[in-house]
Image (tube, rainbow, N blue to C red; front, side, top):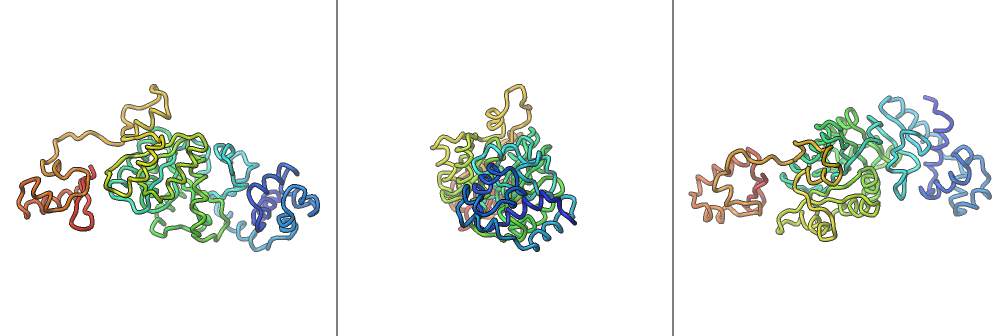
Length: 361
C-alpha cells in the first residue's frame, strides 16, 4: 500500500529519535507542515529546536518503519490521525500535550463524541468491578463514550459497561496499536476494535514499557469531560489520571468505600482534596447534564425489592471473618457456610483471604 506523501512525512517525523511532541509542534508552527519541515536545512531547524533534534530530523528514518505502517493500514479499520485531520479529537487539541499523531483502530467517530473517563485499580475487588461496569453502562446509555486504559480490573470493567450501553467505549493504550496488553484482555480488545475504538500515540511494535502507561493517562483525562475513580490505592496510577483531569479543568469524581480497604484510600484522598463523592451514576450526571436532559433510569444501583437476609445485614460492607459473622448472626457454622456459598454464587458477597467475607451489593 502506497501512502499519501503528507501522511508519510508525518510518520517520518514521528519516528525521529528524541523529537518531543513539543518540538514537533514548534516545527509545525514555524514551517507549516511535515513536508516543509523535512525540506529545511539543519541550520534552519536549529533556530526552533535543540541542535540534537535538528540533526535527527535531517537524518532519514529507516524505510522499514514506514512500510510497516503502510501494511498495518491495509486493514480498513486502522487509521493514522494527525493534528491536521478533522477527525483528530478536538478535546485533545485543548489539552497540554496533544500527540502529533494517533494510531486508531475501530470507530474513529467516537473520538469526537461526548466522553467520560472511568479508571481504577488493576487489582480490583469484585464489588469495584461490578460498580465500574454498572457506571460505565449507565453513563454510556446517557450518551457518554466511556474512556479508559484497557488495563485489568476497573478499566476492563468500565469498557464492558460502555460497550453494553448506547454510546460505546474508547481505550487509550500504553503499547503500540498492534499489541494487546494485558493478554487476558485480548477478547475485550477485539470487541473494542469492532464496536468501539482503540487509540495509541506509540508506534507499532512498542512493548508494554512501564513508563508509557502513566504517560497515556493524560490522553484518558483529555478525552473525558470528567473522570471517575472507582477503586485506587494511594500509589495507584489512577490518581495520576485524576490529577491531570483536574489540571485540565475537568470534574473529578471518586467512589467512597470501607475505611479498612487499601483500595479505597486513594479515592478517600481525592474526596478530601475536593473530588465529588458519588454513589450512583445520577450523581455524575447531575454535574454533567442539566436536569431536563437526564433520564429517570440512569442510576447505577437499583434499590432492593426484597429485604436482605438478617445474616447478610450482619455481614455488612466491611470485611468480616467467619467466626465473627457466626457470633453476630447466631447461626450454626454449617448453616452459615451454606448461606455464604449461596450468596457468593449470587454475586452478593465476595470471599477474601483469611476466611473473610464482604458484602458487595
